[in-house]
Every structure is written in C-alpha cells, then in structure tokens.
Image 1 (cartoon, helix red, strand yellow):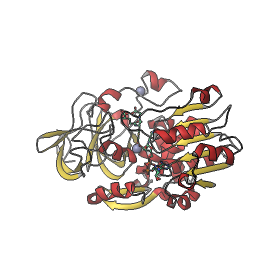
Image 2 (cartoon, protein in one colour):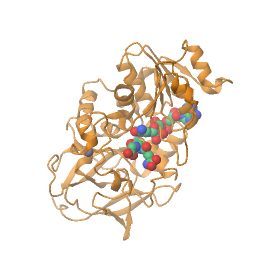
Image 3 (cartoon, protein in one colour):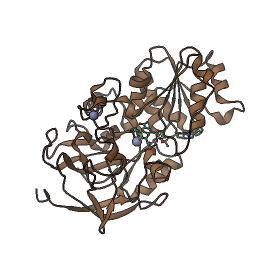
Image 4 (cartoon, protein in one colour):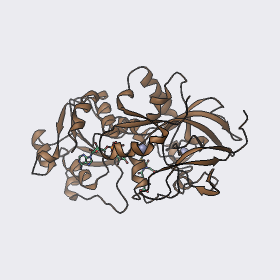
Length: 379
Ligand SMILES: NC(=O)c1ccc[n+]([C@@H]2O[C@H](COP(=O)([O-])OP(=O)(O)OC[C@H]3O[C@@H](n4cnc5c(N)ncnc54)[C@H](O)[C@@H]3O)[C@@H](O)[C@H]2O)c1
Ligand SMILES: N[C@@H](CCC(=O)N[C@@H](CSCO)C(=O)NCC(=O)O)C(=O)O
Ligand SMILES: [Zn+2]
Ligand SMILES: [Zn+2]
C-alpha cells in the first residue's frame, strides 16, 4: 500500500480547548512505530465521556486533542513487533488495554491493565510521543484511541481483531458504552437471578446495564431518569418499571425503599453525579444490597454517605469498561451481537456524517440521542 511507512494527511475533529466546538482540520498522522498499529477509522460513536473531557472537567484532560474512543476500523499498517493484527483486519480500538503480562492482566480480579496507563493519561503513545500534528503543532491522543479522525495510531495492546462479518457501523459501540453497562451488571455486580435492580441514567450505558440485568434473570429492573422520554425506549432493554425523581418531593431513596420492600438488591449509577451515586447506594437493601458506580464524576467531586450504610451491609463498587478483559472479550461480544444475544442496533438513535460531529454532542446534551454513530470513512 502506498501509505505504508509514510505520514498520512487526513481529516480529524480537533478539540482546541475546553468547551470549544470541535473543528474539522487537516492533520498529519505519522506511521506506527514499534508495537503500534495505524487504523483507518470507519465509524465512531460519541460517549458522554468525550463530552466530559471536552467540558474541561476531566483532571486528565489535555488540549489540543483528538477525542473519541468508541470506534471501529480497518488496519492500514503495523509497526515492528505487532503480531496479533494484520493489514486489512477489522478492529476495535480499546481504551482499557490488555497486555496479558502485567500484574493486573495476570489477576482474574480486574481488567485494568496498567502497562501503558501512564502514557495514555498523558495523551501520548507508550514511547512518550504523539503521532498527530496539525499545522506543525502536536495534538494529544485520547484514552489511547482518538477515534475522531480518519486515521489513528494505537498501541498493539489496545486493539482487537473482530469478525469481518460484523457491521462496523454497529460494533463500534463495543468500544465503550454497551460493554461497560452490560459488564457492570454481569461482571462487576454479578446480578443474581430473581433479584431487584435499579439503574440511574438511561443513556447507552444505563440501558446496557438493563440488558445485562435482564440477561442475568433479574425479576424487576427499575429505570430512573429525569428525562421521561427515555422510559419508552428503555422497555426494549428489559426495564420493567420507571421512576422520575422530579415526580417526588421526598428523597428518591425513600421512594425506592418503600416501593421495593426495604430496598434493591443491585443499583447502578450511570450519570456521573455524586448526589445520585449516594442515592443509589442508600436505595440498596440493608444487609446485602450492592451499588455499582459507572458514571464518571467531574474533577474535585467526592462521594459521601453515612458509614452506617456500609456497616449495615451495603457494598459500594465501581467499574471501568464493565470489568471485561478487553482483547479477550470484545471479539466474543461481537459474536454475541451476531447471534442476537446482545443488542446493538437499538442503541443507535442517529447516523450522522463526520462534519456533523458537533450536532452529535448537542443531541447528547439535549437528551435526544442514545448513541449517534458518525461515518468517518466508507468501509
Ligand atoms: N465507567 C466506565 O467505564 C464508563 C464507560 C462509559 C461511560 N461512562 C460514564 O457513564 C455515564 C453515562 O454515559 P452515557 O454515555 O450513557 O451518558 P448519556 O448522557 O447518554 O446518559 C445520561 C443519562 O442520565 C440522565 N440524567 C442526567 N442527570 C440525571 C439525574 N440527576 N437523575 C436522573 N437521571 C439523570 C440523562 O437524562 C441521560 O438519560 C457518564 O458519566 C459517562 O462518562 C463510564
Ligand atoms: N480521566 C478521569 C477518569 C475518567 C474515567 O474514569 N474513565 C473511565 C472510562 S470512561 C469511558 O467512557 C475509566 O476507564 N477509568 C479507568 C482508567 O482511566 O484507568 C480522571 O482522571 O478522573
Ligand atoms: Zn466511553
Ligand atoms: Zn496488562
């Protein structure tokens, strides 16, 4: 291929500063170095975490940056030492890598590979440099993925090859929101058959939690949102009951404890709001209720509750990427989608062009979208 070993000039949506609209720019993407892979991105969705970092609330947020971490694409070229993917493979970039060598990868207790976590948080490749420039200025990478670009470069531990039969405009969602919610229920909380569950926030992440609770055989799955338009949509994902906190004067935990004879077996916070994190914990049943934090809270925010809540048997947990060991699990989730065990199409509320990327952020902020999928390059 003519581009191998050479920089590629292409379009990317650049975030020049916090709260600024993304700007479609011509950028240069350097060739992959050792243990790196250059990908032609075909589709990307927008996750709330992209908006969170763009808002300036992310303590690790750096600018100028190429955001995006829910994408799919095709390998354009590989650096020395790359063995697991080849040119032409269909792939999903992974913001939680899996090196299979570090202490975290070797433990069955976590999916949080730490091999490249420091450089990833610094917005650079593992060797400390960026592959992106725009008019001679360095751009930062984001979450090891940077999918808001026609081409990106990722570490070889941050990518997985998937079945070529899978539609890339749907399986891009397996880069973040859907596995996160589905795994929060199945891997982190380990929802039990017949249990009662409640989910705060019915965006893609919360809806995927509902699907995971249903898969685990929960008997009641309550969806909680201040946007009542989400309730009808949520029925498709297994939710059985709905509560809008705006309809009540008293604290929502009191409402839920009354509705569920003492509280829920499992609760999930999928908003990123420390007040709802507290409500979710305090809505758990005394003695055994488990609350899982999925939402990402802004810089400086802290959670609180009376320690008595934990003394009396409630457990507070958290999850990143739903606890999935990424390279092992994402190809299996693709197969679950292809065999119709896992929903993906139902999460796609809008299909937009790359030029409409700022509209995708607007649709998320106004609560009109579940996931907007942007076409970056035709397959
Ligand atoms: N832990 C992880 O690995 C992980 C992965 C993906 C996303 N996230 C985080 O999960 C959260 C959800 O992401 P998303 O993409 O689904 O977001 P989203 O914006 O699509 O959905 C959020 C939902 O929360 C609702 N909401 C907002 N404030 C509320 C309140 N006070 N009470 C009840 N409902 C409220 C909104 O109406 C909306 O339906 C974000 O914080 C995101 O950063 C975490
Ligand atoms: N950078 C932030 C934290 C952001 C955060 O918590 N990210 C989640 C994924 S959100 C995906 O949409 C995550 O995986 N965290 C684990 C990790 O980043 O290692 C901060 O500094 O507070
Ligand atoms: Zn995300
Ligand atoms: Zn590792």
